[in-house]
Length: 175
Ligand SMILES: Cc1cc2nc3c(=O)[nH]c(=O)nc-3n(C[C@H](O)[C@H](O)[C@H](O)COP(=O)(O)O)c2cc1C
Image (cartoon, rainbow, N blue to C red):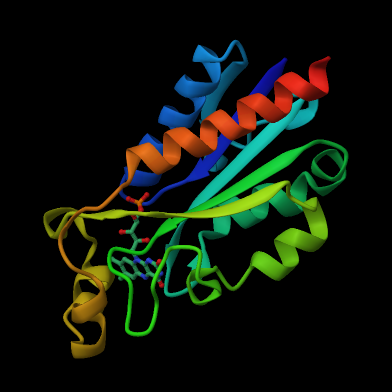
């Protein structure tokens, strides 16, 4: 059983989530590796595909969407799991990362193209010292400041549990 975990990450925290998921899949006996969407990986010889993107201003990164659109035929024919890495804090009125408010704008299109087994939102991380100019400026806006606090909010237990659920699904389908 071979899987690829494709990610789009601006500052590295989503890449680390993807690498962690690939590592967990390997522990479960799945031959898995994490690859940047930038590198245009070929999912053709994989039995399963996991795709994750950081979310910026409500959107998946364009490299991730390009990967999905370019490989739509292969992806429609494989089990696909999606994740988004973003929220640093739950905004007003939002009680969990499963709230539809936190879903990326592209999720409708993604669902249509790949019919994912699941889409999961994970908390992200923000290191102000690493932000590019535009992101630093955006973060200074009063509305953004409240929802973009500094820190690493990634919930490794939630990510591990999700990776385990993928491994279990693949084990069942391999039988
Ligand atoms: C300018 C800016 C805008 C952001 N917009 C969103 C957003 O709309 N939704 C969200 O969930 N997270 C948002 N985030 C949080 C990032 O998605 C989070 O920091 C993520 O972990 C970054 O991943 P990366 O390190 O892989 O680039 C934003 C972060 C910044 C700096």
